[in-house]
Amino acid sequence: MGQLLGVPSFATRWFLPHYRPLRSGSWEIRTSSGVLAQGYWSPAVLVEELPALLRDGAVWMSLTPMEIESQEIGLALSRGHVVVMGMGMGWAAMAAALRDEVTRVTVVERDGDVLAIHRELDLFAQLPDAARAKLRVVQADALEWQADAPVDLLMPDIWLPLVSDGRVEEVRRMQANVGAEAIYFWGQEMEIARHARAAGRALDGRGIADTIAEFGLPLVGPTYPGHADIVATVAQRWMRDRWLPGTPQSE
Picture (cartoon, rainbow, N blue to C red):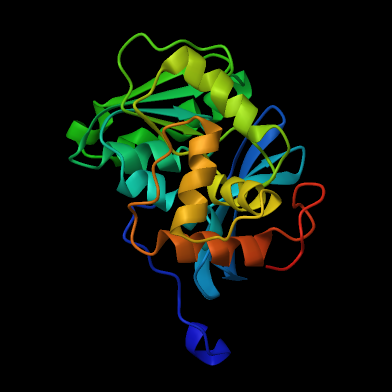
């Protein structure tokens, strides 16, 4: 089908678990096929099979190229003990556990219905024994949970929209309890872009570094190949009208 539409079929280096339709409380898993979807920074591709997590009929998360690429930088730089805030579809936690550089993955999720749907799906059973043994799931509030062991990377993903006000402050609250050596939070490229532009900085290496320094958080990302270009691309593609108040609309 991708050839007929003139676009490639979606392919990724990351493990993609198999999902089946399932409901638990207000949450459910649905699957669709033949979906044309744009990446976080890459061109549109055809997704042959697309699973999604819905709450009360509204999509909360799906394994689109955008969703996967929006976690890719953190996963590519993950090591040691990784804490994932928000179970979601479980994909990021599983992808981290499959990395040799990662020794332990703790998933923090507060919603009992989300945990119930994952118990029924048993996605972790699709992993090799060594990766599965790294995973631990804790039912708790991401903004209150305190780490019981040193954390090498904190990966918060507790938000529905890609961009939301107060996100940096919420990550600071999590970091105060966790004390992670490094952080990669969902949508952080967007937060870097909107704060940099509001401060009159260019979306280049220097402007990004100065903005991260102002956050006061040990964010990973700038060492990822092409990072500055990625920040500029995703901001142009996804920011829409969600810049901070008073931000110039052109550089």
